[in-house]
Length: 222
Image (cartoon, rainbow, N blue to C red; front, top):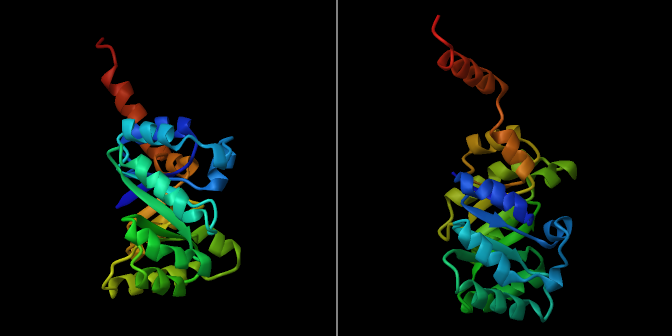
């Protein structure tokens, strides 16, 4: 099982990454906006330096667009990432325009995650172009009225029979219960928000039990 922190909030990075719970960090323009960042002016080297300091194993950055500037953006981030000790992964939208960018990015030696997946059929595309990862938006799929669990089950079956082994990194998780059900299907990679991380580590009965242990351990002999 590998977990990724889905956040561009450096305070959340500093809170959660040292726990050892997370293998990597995933980012995108919406997360940047929520963190008060303007995507075109982000100091990527600074963010990467912090990620390395926190001992992140993978750092995922999404393309700002799929136009003629995309390859240049990816190449610049790859060059910056070479200064740091983690695996850099570029996130590419699962559109026709995005798919057409992948061959050149592969020639540049980039690791690829195909993002914004809403249908099991998109696994076939991601695997055929030899992407490293595909990110299905589970919560958004459910909210769009799709049978998200069925799509995820089909994707897992496709992954099991794949020769390229494109990994499924489940995104847009809304609750720990969703994670449990998907993990039981065999899904091993999840990117989650700090709020879901907090929910994952919160169990009232565990807190109660520990409180009782503490109370017993600190009793004064009479």
